[in-house]
Length: 290
Ligand code: AMP
Figure 1 (spheres, rainbow, N blue to C red):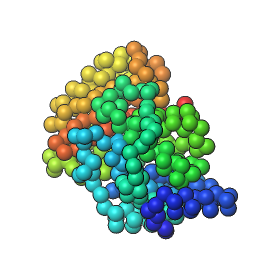
Figure 2 (cartoon, rainbow, N blue to C red):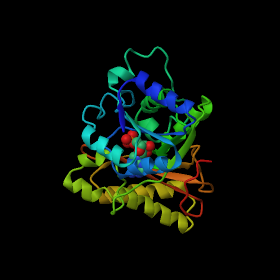
Figure 3 (tube, helix red, strand yellow):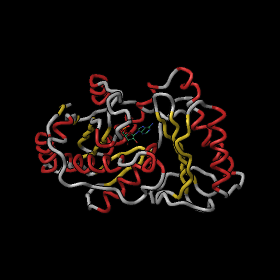
Figure 4 (cartoon, rainbow, N blue to C red):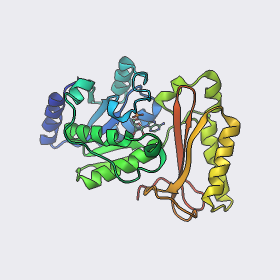
């Protein structure tokens, strides 16, 4: 496995492989790799000649009071995980390499900004699409792999690829969970012992919603209330949002009559956790980008 730290050597590497007719699969991450990331790497490994992964904690997507400084990092561990999963090139640029000067051209997300994480983390997705534009230009992937755990991110990346004609196929993979249902996340290490016992309640609250829909409930407000009630009675965290929206448009709905996403974000003392499920109107699970 090659570890690559500069834009120019990464571009050289990808251009060389493109000229040889190789298909490049790319998995962008912020590191502190866990089984969720590994599932993306494994899938990308199967489907491409060359597997490129990146590890970059992107300051642009963190707000001023967010956890950029203390976002968990462990390069050695990540290198081992990348090697184990057959990564050919691990791209690990520094912040200075990625952003040598202030950007003179801004990329801004204008759709879906009034819901979910875009609403509670203003500017977050502008940072995401900016870094992904740079990463896509540097790694020239044919296929990219993202987790549905960050569902709004997948919807925004889908839009980026379509709006700006990136010749890239997007793959959306299911959320990998701990045995108790907690979605794997780099941020889980910042839960206190008590909070760790409470955190599976996020997924359980989504299952409560799923059951409601199975039972024929069509009113989104009632479903949202049930989820909030469940989280409030089973955790000490503060609800940031509980929303039910159409998926992938992320538009509001008055009745559960199409594919929907039910998404939650809960702030614990040192970690903000998100989770979601995507359902058909009869309550069965789904994960179609559309
Ligand atoms: P991150 O390092 O948190 O930016 O995540 C990098 C990629 O891994 C994103 O596409 C995430 O959606 C995906 N990912 C993170 N956690 C999980 C998980 N538990 N299951 C599946 N994919 C995940």
